Amino acid sequence: MTLRLRGVDHAAYVTTKPIETIRFYRDVVGLRTPHAITAKGWGGKPHPDFVHFFFDIGSGDRLAFFYYFGVPEGPDAERPNYHLALHVETEEDLLAWRRRFEEHGVRVIAQIIHETIESIYVRDPNGMIFEITRPLRDLTERDQRDAELSLEALVDSLTADTGATLEDFWRRKAELVAKELDNEATPEETGQEDD
Image 1 (cartoon, rainbow, N blue to C red):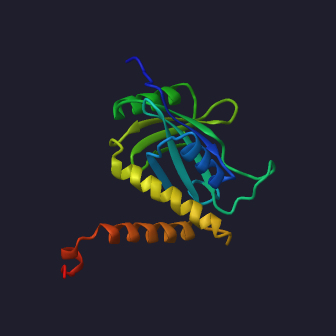
Image 2: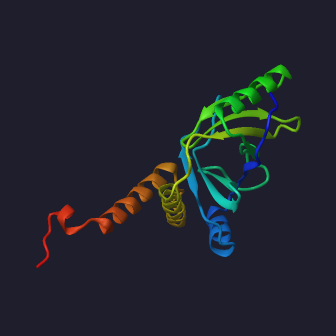
């Protein structure tokens, strides 16, 4: 079987300036935000809570950023590594890549099912994380709206300048979602009638 890649799924970087990053790529460059992921820390060693947000750069490719809650800025700050993720089409393709890495003595760090993708992770000789990912489903307008609300909640929670946590972010996002749902409710749904 010939192993194929279909392009860059995402190149991921860390931002210590998420508000400026969002404003630059979303507002100045004009990139859509098709998806965002939030999570408590995970992995074998301590990992900070994070928001992982994506900007559409065309052809199904994305530029992504991690913002880690509670991680200090500066060149000496400990942060997880940047990574490059490449697309494959199917689960069979993904598992074939896993076998190839293992056959070549490259340790697969993890195989994780995320919300919309499944990925395997290895490290290249420089220690950079290299990811192969396959889609679990297509991204929808609902995913894009969720990402937009996530970025708004992140900006709002960090602007409050209270040492924001992932829980603060989730609270703010819940408020935004509730507000949006209230605005969409019809009089019949709210039990109110027109006068």
